[in-house]
Image (tube, rainbow, N blue to C red; front, side, top):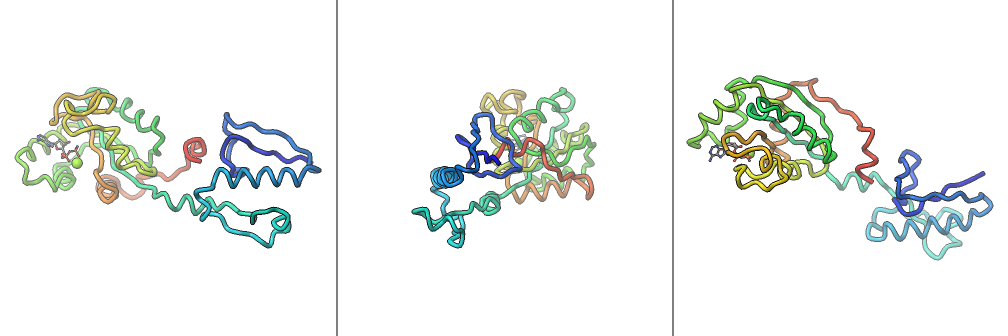
Length: 233
Ligand code: DAT
Ligand code: MG
């Protein structure tokens, strides 16, 4: 009988996680059980020292008595619950669609590692555009903004992930493309505020509000990307 020890990576030895390329494995005979236990115990303590409150103590486990520390069981569900999954509404505006930038824009979010949960090409009615931008109703540019957003099809997207709202805003860049940093979508692909190719929700609350506004029930898809364990430990 053999047991595998994993070195150099996450010490969470869940069998559901694939082994990361940088990790090394070695096979130990089961007759080396006490040594293996000691190695694993030390790895746990080293890698998760600052998160010790996330471990439960299990003094009832027999080998705990033979070690100088209490045995700890890692509780990954507690770590997951600490990191709030957000959703954001991202929209390629009519200029982005007309200029053939849809693939490029989707690709940036995919490559970053966020999860696409909704996607459609859509001709936006005036009432929806006005509701979406209702906070800007008093602005002088509001009529032109509505005219622009309804001038051709848009690509509506819902993206999900930890920190996705603020990260998407960083990927998008400043409202004025001339002020947007190179490397951002607006910084790389646009030159004018009135043609800034993309929208992104400005808060988690607005992310939820806007997704509910632009997507009907049944249009969103919940799924688990195969790459999930390669993006977050
Ligand atoms: P953002 O899209 O970066 O969240 P915003 O919410 O302030 O920016 O404005 C919504 C859109 O309105 C923006 O993407 C383009 C347009 N807009 C904003 N300010 C403008 C201005 N001064 N002149 C013309 N259009 C403007
Ligand atoms: Mg905005």
